[in-house]
Figure 1: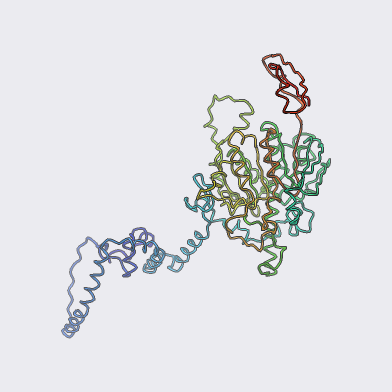
Figure 2 (figure 1 turned 45 degrees about the vertical axis):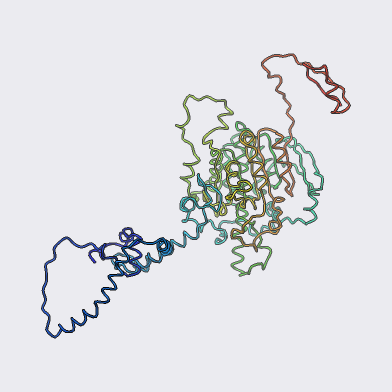
Length: 602
């Protein structure tokens, strides 16, 4: 058969066509047409046979002739065009052909046939275990689509490292293994049990409110649709241990927040005065609306504190799951043996962070890495970090050199200002996995437009919003910018929050919390809303969609300084009071007052 036996396996597999593979499977050898015959003329050799063998040789040739003719006809048949049905069979049997080819090879290489087969089967199992890629054009599309290759969006090397089902809590990591009996605000929130009567009364109960004034935040309005309404005031001094931070946040937070603690008043406190009051509300798992977030003044200060809250929440939730995994393994409990093991939602994503631009998403991820790493000499595992920095970072040379804009413009539109993106982040045991599939992620970071293209609209075939079913913490940052983009995307997102999923997505229902199974997740979701102004549309979202069982807190400071004195053109302003009985009679009462400012007195 020429030099076929001397070729390596890799060269043989790459050189064979589908037709040759089919012939190799059927007949156990390559077609003679593809034999490589040496160009050197072989010298004829003669041998003498004994006369006694002439008869036997002629008889054997006569017996073998029909077999040669039959075999030759079969070989000729393989030279014909392969029908469409054969092509479909070839595609289905590619894996079988590869194994046959390997078994027919000579043992020339260092690796045996059995070892090669085991390696290939392991690769096939890994590829089969990878979830369908949820990415679209930029690598972050709806889950369930597989337009891109899985290798581009999944990290097979660390796949098992970030799986909650196959990992267990390590003792040296620390954590809250008995969250139910502790005074941790996280445990008190997720273990709080609501009754059916309380849920039914939410729609009819009037909202109870109470106002308090805090030193930094100012006028706060506490409200709740449930019967109980609890308020509190911030303490003068705060200790990190009293906040029940998960390890290693107690040690890493001080370094991460050091840039805001340079003043003498903050030397002994791990928070700035603003951060302290904001985190106390966040850590109580109340909904929060803060309309005084500005890019020039306190934007980064607020981003640091809500990233601390996000990482603290995710680490506690995952530690509870891993601890229960260890308990299940030690006690060998069956499915549904103990309700104490209910520690999950219907899907894995727990946190959704909505930011307007890629630059904001980049800063959030950098804060996550800093909070998990800190001063530790041992670097944490961050998969796909180089790719993330390339796609979400910016090149300073792309900025025009002579472009001059106001300071607030430079602070808002800094870095990569692409507003169509979405990505998943998985965090487990001080390791971060970027570009994780949505249903394998703990945190989702996206823009309203990026989420809108996933959620889709009614009647669209390719749409998915199951990953929003178990969101426990929703953060909408820089809400005033969405008013300049498309506010409809924000409303569309809120309408699809915490709905029952259409698919199970491989969840273990024996581990799902009862309030999640009862479709009460929206009553346990904490919403943090930050903006630069008090707008009617933003207030409407906070009042309509934020119905947390712990209550809501809104900052309602009345502007003390007006802007009318800053008018450049000096115009006379005449204010005239109009007496009117009701609003319907204002039009009739205001006749003849054109050209002056009216003050209605009813």
